[in-house]
Image 1 (cartoon, rainbow, N blue to C red):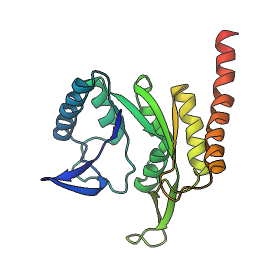
Image 2: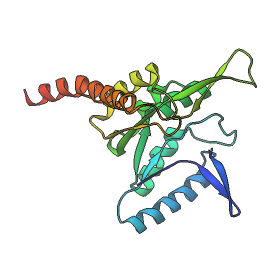
Image 3: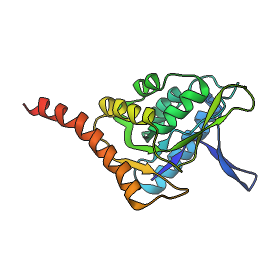
Image 4: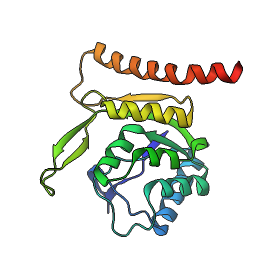
Length: 197
């Protein structure tokens, strides 16, 4: 089971979005307590997914990957690395997604996700674009490249293609899954051959 590192309820009201958290000690304490509660109920590690981000919180005292790494240390949870979200958030917040992947605790990665996103003009910053996580189109080339990078870092992991809106023909969905398989085979087979050779 997995869930995003985000919040979406307030005083009994459910909001129609995954909202960002401030990455600080108080939030870490609260999230760790909730993850522990979930894991006790499940009897197994819970996977926490990195969110798609559009803004950072001024009160944060650590970055997202530092927060996730400390959450793993405190709770023993696992991480679901949404590779497309890493790319999208890196673009939107101005950080290098490769550095993010490098900083993640590889031993905690339990699953990878890929999904399509849309570029829109940033109303707050003329001439700039913001990437929106829509799960409604093919995976971008840059996300495929980052997926290959993540596989080299993390090794073989179950991978899910997310396409939730504007569903295409089954052949299109299968071609995305086949591409993920082909990238994994191209990267992981030579490494396996070297390990056993």
